[in-house]
Image (cartoon, rainbow, N blue to C red; front, side, top):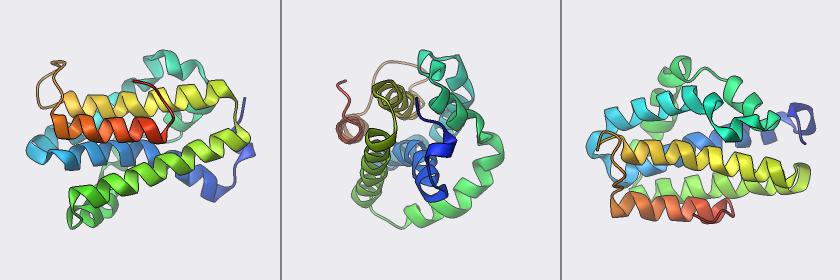
Length: 159
């Protein structure tokens, strides 16, 4: 199992950014409920420690390494402002690239369990964003589902 010490600071930043990028790409696909979706991402991040993928020490470290509530202003000022001027397809492309890079790092330095748990965590966050506007209903907008499918492919997951 990989740990923080197995990655450079730049590599660790990629592992931290990909989950946020996935959530923001889903949000950009259908920004109807942006505020609710953003809140759902932060709430899902907080609740991630209760999910089965958090049994993986690498994923648990990533989850606990950041307080999503204190990160909210940073996200708003950096990612969201930068991405708000980008079309949804460019936001999606950025997120997919972040996920591909994260998976390449985990393929090089992690275990199959690390890759599976990390991918499940990223998809958990993305799904919570997609379902936020519909108050927990299983329905996901087709545009959001398309983004989630592309992210899953970048993470080499089967949905």
